[in-house]
Length: 339
Image (cartoon, rainbow, N blue to C red; front, side, top):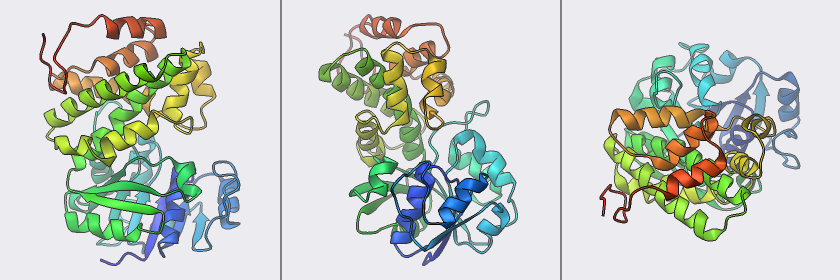
């Protein structure tokens, strides 16, 4: 399928940036959002709230009418927070064309159901899972909006669909790779956000590169353990959706999860740190659900567990460090092998 039209649901930084990516690849894009002021700005070729200084393509327009946004569009991109995915798609069930493709940019698990975003999208939209894809990688939105070269992963159970979507968003600065590992791509994107909170906290406390490298490496190990237990391919976690996204998220103040952790490490309360975030911090909201999923399949996730203790008020940042350093000795690697 040659994708020439798309809708992007959500007008935040990542949604707007991805609309620009599509437009720069030659796709005509209609964006949907609830804020009339933001819609007016986008129709004037800017989104100063989230991407100040960026001029948007004339291939992009915007509307407050979600039904008209998706009507006739070949690709519908979901770029809203995880908690908003279900109600957003339920609002337009039946409005899609028959062979529509849905693409998720959201990263996390749904509270209560513990479902991945791709699963939520299938339930809420009525679109078959074979027509649903997910995108994840080292994709800090501001850098992409500035057209810095980057790569990503488009994953779908139907690899031909993934290829179609990858072609639709491939341009001079955005390089999509293709995967059939939907579970691994989604779980990597969800879990790395939690690890980023821990690493941000360590840096906020003044700890150095050794600590960050340790947390990245051991964070990747627990991400991989969980992914494999859920049926994912271990290789996914060694690629762009895994270590690639983890390194980007854990290395930049442009990451909301890293920045929130940094504020916690510097002494702010969780409420103060969240209040200063420019958007939803999925690492905080998804930490508990991820730990629940890990417990259900018998997977040990000590860094995620420590973040949960902090965000749920049972431990301090200093306690988190002590919990991790006092664990039993084990062999290096992603498996649990005690010495």
